[in-house]
Length: 166
Image (cartoon, rainbow, N blue to C red):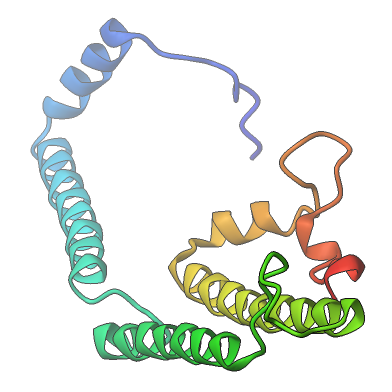
């Protein structure tokens, strides 16, 4: 039988009246006591599950050790990039002793920029992956909307590599 009064709201007086009617019988008192016990158990179980999730965050099954390994790998990528950039020819335009032609100077500068941009893209991808592991299902759905931070702006993920940098 469908419930035709779906939009009916009850006030405190209505609640008290119904509670008093149910409490008049032993069976009604048992029902309310059992209902309260079951709800307390359900609430307690939800709280304990939330505490457990906080104690043991899910980072792709790797935990803190995996997070540390990811951060160490990213730090290593930064160190390698610094070493690679230092090994490239000096590009001080003011230095009359650098001996580079304009073309060589430009090529050296482009090489440095490309190496740094590749490392930044790598780091961005790794960081985005770590952030995705921390997202809730609601966050994932919001991120998949395809909109950028401003109205009518495409998502920044639409073009991850600006052509002028590569």
